[in-house]
Image (tube, rainbow, N blue to C red; front, side):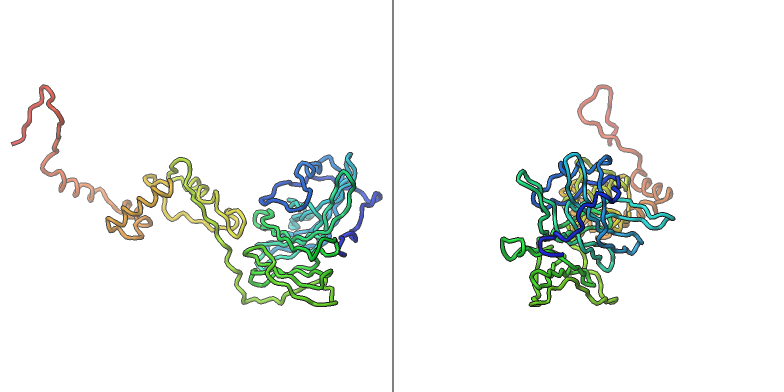
Length: 349
């Protein structure tokens, strides 16, 4: 595709339209100039549109990620967009389960080796103003979390000048075996760009004068270990104490604000286990949790006390309770009265 991204198939009125619903949720701000959720909302179930697949990738679980360009025909006229259609091919007839909106015209799509991330190059976007409308060259790569099917980051590839021809329009994509980088071929500047998956920024540029590279591939490496995601943990203290006996509520509170590799922490990308649950313990603010840990240290209970606590309590038998009660109260119960109540006489010797 050229730098102005005008070689994509245009609308064909003789081709049958499809009807459907496109989800409009996204976890990050869309950088496409002039984009508006209100305008995108026109793609409702009653809007006529046609989807044209441009690339496909197969996830380890068998799902298909299909990059599509969408042409809309509404009472407002023609417009264009696109996204990634998620397809479940397990049944007799493949079923579209979800659409990940990109609000622009995607091209190549690539997956990390472990299938946790997908990357889509944006080749163009439809710009419509009071003065006219046109396909404008794209210069972005979208990062998608495949567990939640949400767009979690956008990388701006930049431009070498103000002209459309200077825009760094992505062509081919490939992901490093360890998921640490994404390589993007940009034919109009004879270059290959490297994106860091940590910062989602272009970190290196490889120049190939006169080559105009349109594709890129990375040799597989079965021994490569996926780079660990950065965990963004925040204060998960709820507004009110939550009994640790209610494990589901406690875990929900822990996951409420955290992110893993830029994606929301969910049970799909985080392995959770209830180590201990006791109604007498509560998940409260960080300050109170810290105070409880200090008391455990002062009493020399050991760093593993919280994990052992339930087992220690469960190990107490009725015989143990009677033995301790006899030692503490074997001489009879002692009642202390404060003040000078009428009719009560002290029997202390």
